[in-house]
Length: 444
Image (tube, rainbow, N blue to C red):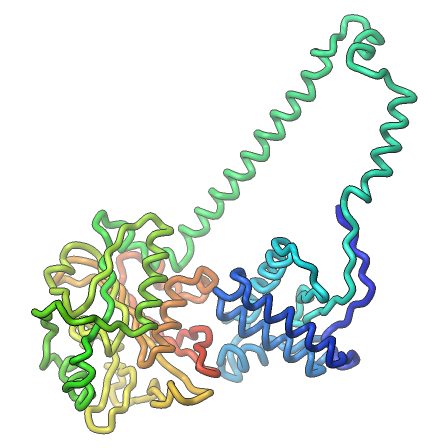
């Protein structure tokens, strides 16, 4: 094993201070960690890790910042949220520890400072001046001593051992070693197979897998339908009276129609494209074939060919046409242009209303709906995900594809024959969507 000579360790406590050079070194290392592939693909790990480093360098509490405080500041939770039923901070911190271990294990460069996270707390540790002594240097004296002792007390070869023990050949002496080696190979293989089997079983039991299960159990490919529009749409009625058009689609006055002209360049919102890509990757990982289609080039007949995923809310005309009569659906006021999620059991309420400043405000909220439903008109299963704004659509995509969030999905998704609707909220900080927070669940 490697021996680490740790010359100096400074923890993130109020008693410790760093000079300008040390702070620059810590932030440089933090930026390298956040840019590493093992970190940057998890937005929750990025925002929490950066906040913990900031807290430590600001001279925070010696015990580290509290879980509830992090839940409120980083993930947009309410002040009285239950940390036992919503362990998003603990889950993300554990993931950070794993990713830090992967980062330092795979990195071959010299690190002026190592950043760690104390188990059981949210306290970063900054370790300066680490010197690693090679494994060979540590083990050589012991090996040399053993070899010298063996030379002085043991026969020089297998033949001399055989001579010392009449009737025992060198081949006989090698058999136990061979059997032990074979046994070790079998044990290692069994452990590897068992680990994969356990991982597969756990995945099959996860709420996330079971939410998708009705779509996975069919033979036909999944159709992923993503919103699109043309340049003419942006300069025409959509730009001038978009709220009235959306209101007509929600009320059923306007039905989706296929675009006859396929020569125009399709434009898809970036977030919708990103979520569609992640959903496609999820299906690919689970061996499910899929096809990607544009909503303007899709008819109801296409949806009869197999299960469907609709990405986007206001911008996906099929989401508005098919699901605007469900209990939870997006709504818009054609005059004020207010956007909200409407609950048919309480239609007067606009509690889940967008701020209207999602693109410009550093602190805001956004809401989304995830729907899983068996459509009797097409005879196929649908999963639809879309938000009032782009941030909530992104958060809905996280909930559908990020395995770390599987535990936060409601138990209602475990029943494969139930229709389910989930209303979620995300806090937008600095233009970035936070973790999804489930507000309501409805099954029928």
